[in-house]
Length: 466
Ligand code: NAP
Image (cartoon, rainbow, N blue to C red; front, top):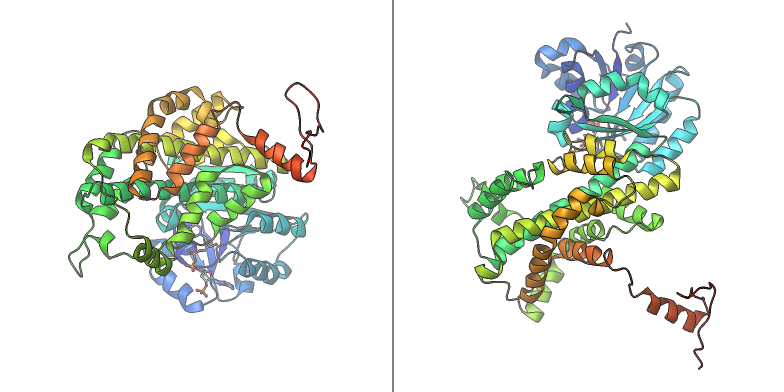
């Protein structure tokens, strides 16, 4: 019986939600999970959607249940599990059958798998939006041959989030392009979350606001230029009360952030590409630093807690809001710049405006601002996003607030790694004559590396003497 339009392996959080989404959109789907009881429970809980779902107990049964040419989605942990599943599936498949890795693969692995598959259909797609997104409409970033993408695009666009009717599912480019774009999405997500956490720190430690007031502030910001999923949920997190203690949830959560590695991959890849993304890197570093709780407590004992408390008139909430607007633009500009560099390096022709468009709905960084970013990237394809007129105008109005927040943070001992490195990036990017002439002088002094003179001539050396 080969009736299902598509197959799926891995009924964990994301796989189960994605399978229900596919069924909900009218496509028959065959599913298989390593632990069979999970497959049974999944179909039992699927309600009326169960008649679109074919549960299978072996990979052979799964393959037999799917229409030819087959397409099978893998939703298992990145790494060895993906290679193992591909190895187990391939002998059961025909030459035209396609494997789609929809997990958070490292794009280098996706490049390798696409090359190993040679002319066997293989796609690597980035799926963002968490469980809720996977169930009701994720943002989907496709990578692999466009012909393979076209074979399943009708299913992937149908299940994706929609922005004013436009599907948030796009083919990004060959091989690992989709997983690369997803990794940068996650890097930007790290920076966005970290900057929100930093302004939360100013409100809590600098201004002494309670969680309810902080939540109300985020809720208010969510009606203005910062309107976004992350600001919205930050407000909800801040106002939620712990049923066990009656305290705000934020007060009972340990201040050590987890991570699964995609932010780190982005930071490492940025170094390989020589792409400057300091706000994103600072956000990854901040997560690493957050986990050093004992060392931080020892530091507070040794050096004393910073004064932190600041007068309300040095830090109006409007200034904080503007600083977050500026920081966000700067972080996104870095992410898009990295995508552009990778596009050149890997010969991908990544569609920057279309990337901003697929991020407008469904994914974790969805926001109103991304709509403007898509327009700006379309209107000014050659420019750093910060310098596209509509964002340059906003930055001209808001970078003073960012400076004020970072300066007050420094004076009061409130760490702001992402906002302060964002400000440094902004200042560096508006300094026509920087200070690397000193670096070049030093390099030539100790290593005879040579430099370029401003009045002409490369490979020059200084008369340094001894
Ligand atoms: P999960 O809830 O832990 O589920 C993992 C699934 O993979 C389970 O069905 C598990 O089967 C199966 N699995 C684990 N190891 C396996 C192996 N060696 N061979 C075969 N199957 C194996 O994970 P998840 O959150 O759904 O994540 C799945 C993928 O989506 C990951 O790549 C993740 O990075 C990515 N992703 C997750 C999110 C998110 O918000 N969670 C968002 C975007 C992307 P058993 O039931 O037998 O254990």
